Image 1 (tube, rainbow, N blue to C red):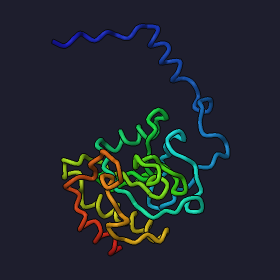
Image 2 (image 1 turned 180 degrees about the vertical axis):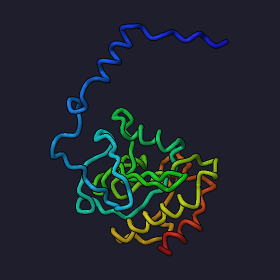
Image 3 (image 1 turned 90 degrees about the horizontal axis):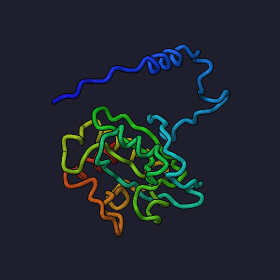
Image 4 (image 1 turned 135 degrees about the vertical axis):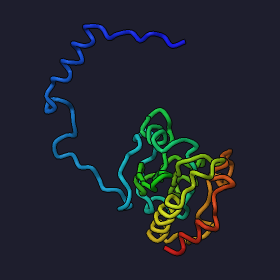
Length: 199
């Protein structure tokens, strides 16, 4: 049985009204002159992960980049963004691709080391791409997701001289010592590599 909702107190109504009356100019905002950097991949939106969730670096000068690691989020796109922005989570990836429309967000700069592979050596040498969805729900692997992700992977491979093959474009489950299964049995590797090579 549903509980009757309690009505807001007079005090709460007055506080809400007072807050609504505060001029927008007085609310905190971006610092004057603050620069929002452009993403490394021009078709991505810049949505930075917490600085507590990755390691600043200067790749490829400090570490060679020779892998792209494909992940599946095991949650929704919005939840993934929340996790990466939360400094307590200690996890990130360079990119996140949304299922419905292929919208791509960059969360960590490519020169920096995202914490996505669960193995430090693989983190230092790879770019991590998360894909919205679940490994056991192939409906999330939409045409637009495959195509958008493949263009991103192809651009990364071209930029860093990474061969566009299964030895260098791997799943999270292929990282040594991992207990992850993503991208899972429904990820169409043949189709994906074909799309990457045909960009």
